[in-house]
Image: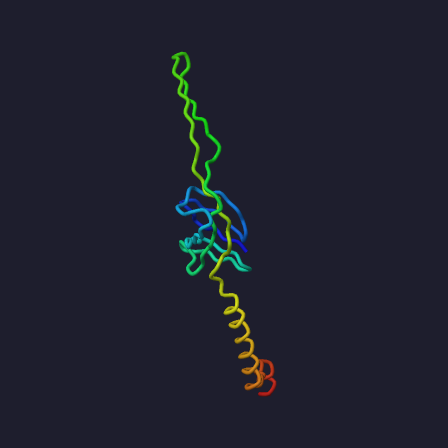
Length: 142
């Protein structure tokens, strides 16, 4: 079972107990967060949202706030003596997916079981009647 969820403007494929780094989220370490913009879910059957799947939420826990490795930005123009060096460290949050909630597994199983019972009772009430074919009708007329 997995889901594609939008977190802080980016889309992530997440599963149960998965750890991932996302752009900095507001919240303290150890606090719970919930994401309701689920774009796709796969739980035996695939459900695609338009634009989001309603009723499904992805729950997570904030593990840590940290910074990514430094990215060096270096600009240079040849033969002019122009050089600029800059760096950037992106602020990240490490989260762990605690669960994907909102699936109605019990209700689906009950619905599947109920129509089977109805079909059996309908078959018992009305016995099958054979329809005469065209050949049988033409032979009976002669």
